[in-house]
Image (cartoon, rainbow, N blue to C red; front, side, top):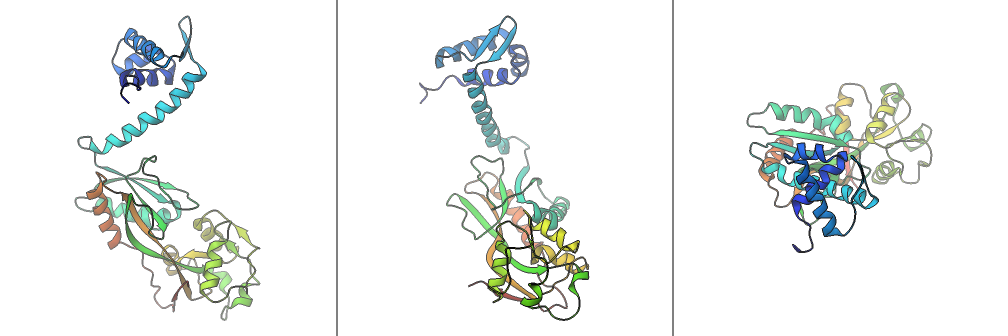
Length: 310
């Protein structure tokens, strides 16, 4: 393989020069002379057997092949930098990926308390919208993630379950009205779907024994639980929410529960990290803190009955 690879210093010189199309700026960034940059790039062109730059006097322009190689090298050197970052002396920043709704309704406040805890570590949080929660540690710049799933994240991933997902209908207190709710009453109000595939309403109706009694191909569709919660708070209909994330809003009166039955989907929120990670000790410390600050599922004074899906 060493015989097939160009010299690393030549590849780096080209990658830096390609970003600005300037040998002078590349020389400044790499603390080399301009003639050294030029020699490295000529060596690389000779090794590859193609032109990487078009030279028109003092001006440089990447060839089509040069543009393609520059994109690939930029991604490659970024991965190398990400791989080395945890080992830098004094580096203590844990890179965490998490879904946006979970972040806004639990994780953000939890991490703020973690930062104030004795012997805590710095956490860089990336709150990302994900239709299906997923992380690829081989190509994404994260050391760990909090994901919703069934605990099967692949052989190269370790995981720790934080808490389960329970679905429950939610609405504005003004929409709750008097009397009890049943399938016929639900069928007469606007439905709010947190996802386009309407999967959460389907699972709740199935777990509650109400499948087929409420028409699901109507109502408003959103991309996230957070958007569904916002629409419910504004009185636009009855949405379906994650009990762990809506319980606080129910307790403070911003949301109400038309039904008192929560359905466990069998999924849960997990802290996941790559097996053999250099950050395993830090991830463990974060996991311990998250476990002791899990959201409360109980709603005082409310008869919430959990029922697992078959």
